[in-house]
Amino acid sequence: MSASRVSVCMATYNGSRYVVAQLSSILAQLGPDDEIVVVDDASADATVDEIEAIGDPRIVVHRTQANRGYVRSFERAIGLATGDVVLLSDQDDLWTDGRLESLVAATDAHAVVASNLLLLDSGQPLRSPLTGRPWLLSRSDDGRRVRNELRILAGDAPYFGCAMALRRDALALVLPFPPYLRESHDLWIATAANTAGLLGHVEKVSVLRRVHDANASSSRPRGVGAALRSRLLLIRLWREARRRTAQRRRRA
Image 1: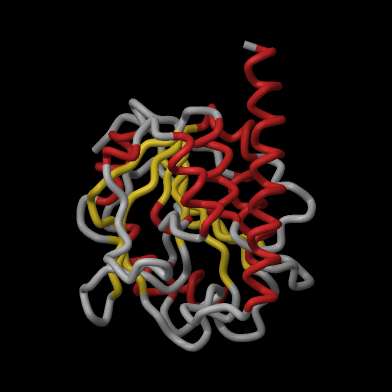
Image 2: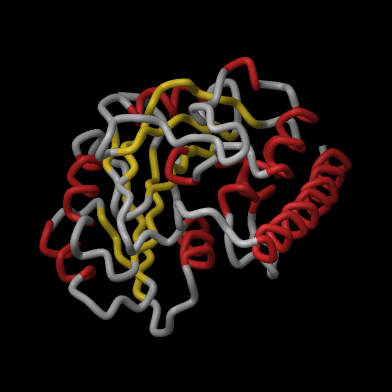
């Protein structure tokens, strides 16, 4: 087990159906001093009861009284994390064996790392919405800032929060999330890290993604209007990332 202390940040909302299986896959990889920070976004089902019934002191649940959305829940969870390395986790996937070790090891070289995922039901990768090819990251993407940003802006970059890890020194760059951010916190993290030259890519499959009708992010194609709004948001995030990167360099 790595000497780095790990915080797993999870946002939950009406996730009682799968959350125990997900937490079991996480707890099996954690050390005794690691933690799972859960921010529950005012669930109306038994999500919190299911989590607390596990009875593991490494899990700390923070409840919100009103639903604020998954982006703000993740932001709060990351802000509450105390570990040297922060790993993000959805409530309904499964971690693969060796995920924690590989992502923590990768943060020795890169302050933010993104890895690959497969679909739980088929064992296959997602397909690029632009090319139709398997949607996978490669180590060869390290340091290719312009290419990576163009892929993000085009909607062809498979950066998923559930497959990411951040070193503590990167948190000042990504937090607070921009106030206008209502979706795609993972693309904000990737954009900020890529712009600052902190982003690394791990080819290992670290997550088995469960697709179901209650996923926070839909696998269905967006309409034209929604796609255009998303592109404008990504441009705005890129500009914010450049501003924060410049600030970071002035302070160095």
